[in-house]
Image 1: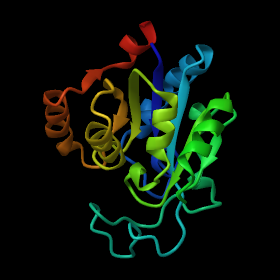
Image 2 (image 1 turned 90 degrees about the vertical axis):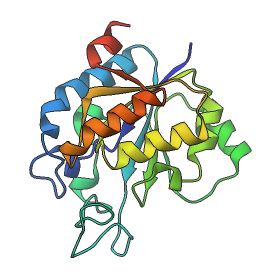
Image 3 (image 1 turned 120 degrees about the vertical axis):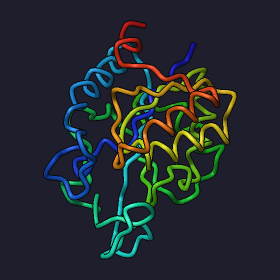
Image 4 (image 1 turned 45 degrees about the vertical axis):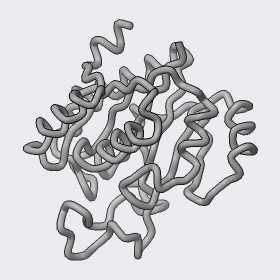
Length: 209
C-alpha cells in the first residue's frame, strides 16, 4: 500500500495568529500537524504539499475582499508569512511552479527524487497548477491522507479536485488537523464529503496505523 500525505497550505500567514490571514484556531492544530509530518518522515511516506505564492495583482487578492472569493494580501512571495511553519517543514522538497511542464519528463524527475513535493499556486485551487495530476499519477498512491487549512477554501478545492479527477484513490481527511475560516460551514462540508466517500478520520487513527 502506497500512502501519500497531502499538506494544504500550512504557512505562517494562515497558521500563526500574527499572520496576515490567520485561520481562526489554527495554532491549536500545530502540534497535530507536527506529529503527522514526523510520522510521515519516520516511515518514508511522501508528503505532497501546496503553498500560496502571491504577487500583487493575483486574482484572489483585494483591498476590499469579500472573504469568499477575494482576501487581503497574504503569503506574498519572499515574505516570512509565505513560508511553511517549522512543524510542517518538508524534507528535501522538490518545488514545482504553476507553469506547465512536460508530463513524461516530470514523471521521471519525480521517480528520481527521494524527498517531498511542494506545489506553488497563485489561486485557491491547487489544480490550477497543471503539474499536480501528472505528479499524483507518477506517485500512484493507493491512499491519500489530507490535512491543513483552510477547510472551507483551499482544503475544499483540493478535496473536490481529487474527487473529480481521481475518484478511484481512497481519500481520508484528518478532521482534527484542519480549521475553517468560516467555522459554521464545516459541518455541511464534512457531511457532504462523507456521503461522497471521503473517510473522515482523526490523527490518533492515522498515527496508530
